[in-house]
Length: 442
Image 1 (cartoon, rainbow, N blue to C red):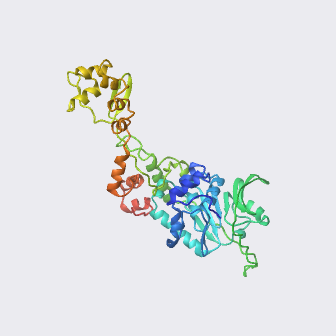
Image 2: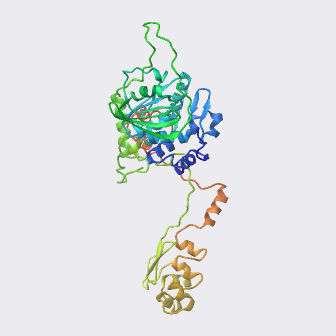
Image 3: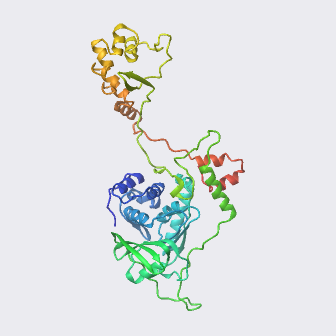
């Protein structure tokens, strides 16, 4: 299943394609997708296929197509503090993206049939926490996984605000899945070849919406066996809901405070593009582009001077003008004619041109009428070199020359990890600093 959008060269280009095709429609979902590189959940030898809109399988390891995950994330309508259950959690890619939105006080559980896939998911989760630059940009609800068949969850188990099933469900198991939901909760699942959103509106009332046609492998039915000790059917206990320790709460609070407080030395908030208040990605202000996003840098010349010509204000990309002397002339201007023409000072011909009185060529130029070079430059319109400079836009020649010198496109500078810097500056012992950093290396 997949192939709905073009492949990307990297994670951000893939997401751009998903946005253009309207699979990703909300900023919240976009930020979560950009924060995690899909290729990190592939085996190394298959990374080249990570940015195609296709499902991928290797043995028991499986990832759905990006367009499917996009629709699922949009349909779940996530926000901080919810309890989420992922049936068929696989590599943990979806659960990790969900954890970015839930924040530290949500619940993020997964049930996976294959024990080797759970081991793989925990390896990828550990890699994300230890190495991803995105980890410090939000407050994270770390997922927990258990091994077992999701059709063997005992009926007395807790209910969730959001449930997703990553395998095809038949009508026989629809009620079973619905009972995992709290009132007001949302269930997203492939139901008879249709990705379906079911909302529990009451104790025994539901709303159902078909999203898109999909093709999923069916749920694996439980084996018909009983527990030999007591003769009861085997059940799969869900992960425990653990109350956080005071030490963990302190770490969450300190990291949150460091994100949202202002830098007293500068007197204004720092890192507002990367960090924000609240809990979870939904209110964290995580920059829309992940750390791997690369953009071409556009050079612009600063408009440091202003010319008044015939009551029009024209920006000029000239060096910062020197102070006026006693005769209202600018100092440091060696080219007398150009200086006088630009500022309308002194010289019989140039003075008249600035006042719009005389000087057939230059007078018209000052009035914004003629003069092939100077007239257009004064209006900020033409003149291959001066016109572009007057508009304050760097010429293409400058960019192309820079690219020829460097041999590559100009890239945006990587963002500074402000949270890490603030933690390292705290007057604390090094072990406490490393605890606040989740023992992450730089």
